[in-house]
Image (cartoon, rainbow, N blue to C red; front, side, top):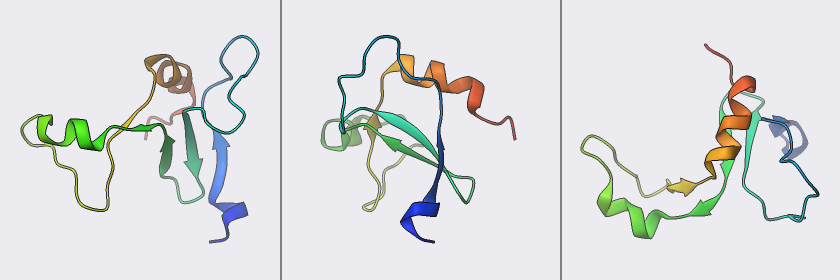
Length: 81
């Protein structure tokens, strides 16, 4: 898969007001294969030892924080199945 065809779309409409992000804002992106990618703050170091029972973070994975408002705005774009 080429980089240009990797991302299908951003989920959720833009936050209200002017964007001050340029290149460093949290985001939720739908991938061409149907999966999703998250851009957010890496909190793996602080959070890995505090995960709830049954959750885990493998060596190739990261725990990422996104603002609640971002997920709420994206909810309408996330397919039910």
